[in-house]
Amino acid sequence: MEENQVYQMPLIGDPAPAFEAVTTQGKIKFPEDYKGKWVILFSHPADFTPVCTTEFMTFASMADEFKALNTELIGLSVDSLYAHIAWLRKIQDIEWNGMKDIEVKFPLIEDIKMDVSNKYGMIQSQSNTQAVRAVFIIDPKAIVRTILYYPASTGRNFDEIKRIIIALQKADKDNVATPANWQPGQDTIVPTAGSCGTAKERMENQDENNYCLDWFLCFKKEK
Ligand code: BEZ
Image 1 (spheres, protein in one colour):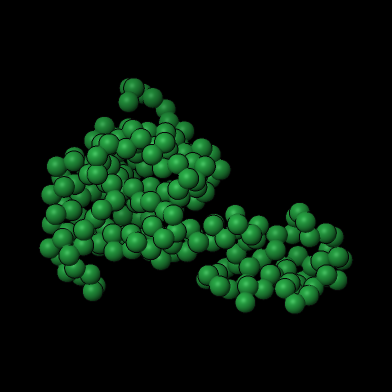
Image 2 (cartoon, rainbow, N blue to C red):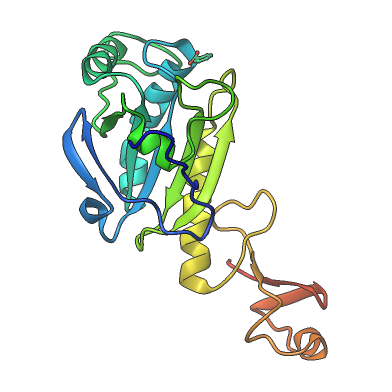
């Protein structure tokens, strides 16, 4: 990192910044190594801390669910590789919330120089020596699609992160949106703009597959 370098953190819709990093699974080159895959790049404040430990156990236990969604996980903190390895080993001995023998198989980036965390705006006012709890959901074209931040005292909701991935994949595939609290299998929203015609046409064109509650709120039946 150059001294006094000013970083512009990526926003939703921006290309995800490229980086090369050393991880617990060897070197990675992003985005080249992740072509065609969804990626969850997430940071945590520090190894050997309690909330982060429960997060890693939970995320690692869901790794196969994310794999099934063509989604790879990449963790990051500003700790050393040695700290990462020691912490992940220790995690295997912990039993919590029905989880035990948890092996973290996804890469955890060593970011002592804060190269990656600065590029992603993960170092914020809370601390200049620790990353915040950030989550970047990046699509197969390496575009940032979601950014989440959690406070240090609040562990993340990984079911919600999974739900966002499923909702984004559904939106991309079927050109739909998803309503509040949407769960897979539930009806989706037909976007107002685009192929659905005028408000009058939308109200008139309701059929067994589409229904409108008003001209601006039309749903597609999914069952
Ligand atoms: C934790 O993971 O428990 C934690 C990390 C940094 C600040 C506060 C809590």
